[in-house]
Amino acid sequence: MTAPATAPGAGVTTPAPGVPARPRRQPTAHGAWPWLFVGPLMFGIAVFYLWPIVRTAYFSFTEWGVFGGSTWIGADNYVRLFSDPELGGAALNTLIYTAIVVLGVPIALVLSALLNRPGLRGAKIYRTLFFLPYVAMPVAIAQVWKVIYNGDFGILNWTLGLVGIEGTYWVSTPGWSLVATAVLGLWLSLGFNIIILSAALKNVPRELYEAASLDGASPTRQFLSITVPMVGRSVFFVTVVTVIAGLQLFDLLYALVGASNPVMRETKSLVFLFYEASFPNNEKGYGAAVAIMILVIIASVTAIQFLLQRKWVHDV
Image (cartoon, rainbow, N blue to C red):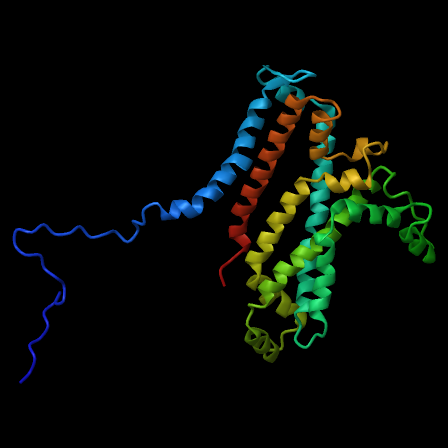
């Protein structure tokens, strides 16, 4: 005796006639639980990030007295800012520093590829050595490099003297002080970039390199045709982070060159312009205008990077 065929919808309880059906719960209706988890994070972002931005934007339209208190002056701070003769030089110094530091991204990619070669011994030790400067205090690192850059007894000038090159006073010479700071910033960024790119390279299938080797592709061709496209998103990430850090140049410049150094007038960055206005000169309204300008520049550059990444970052 064969069992009757199960009709579609069998097993679903049908309400009795006259009894209202229980409303089905929507899959996305979870009540207040999501907000309990996300709420503290959103509260922290609102209090420690968004609210300070709003207050700084308001203060940029005010003038502060010596003993506190603000007076609304409209856009006078911005008019003064864009007519400041030091603004152009500070912006140019910031862009030059950022451009030099960004050169560390391809350097980090090459080093990461070398450290991920099969059979390389001590790769973890090398990555650790590269990463250690990144976790150290920038001020402490700058003090060590001041000794390296010293024009009288620094190891850099001593090494150059071995090959017949006469060094200079790197942190006290106009032009060279910014380059010396940028080289230090590039060196400090290598550790973070190598860790991120090395993690991305571990996800690249080795079969791709083996197939390319069978086709006769050289190591350089494999790097350009396999490695670079496969880690494009990670390269984009470290580039964005490096550019944002470069546009916020202050601590290395302040610790390496020094505020009292006469060359600082030709080396100051946008953030140093903000520091100088807000603290030594006690012009907090003008300093707030500089801070808002830096925020707009960073947001604009980051947005441009996200637009351009569609042309060279592809899903593989």
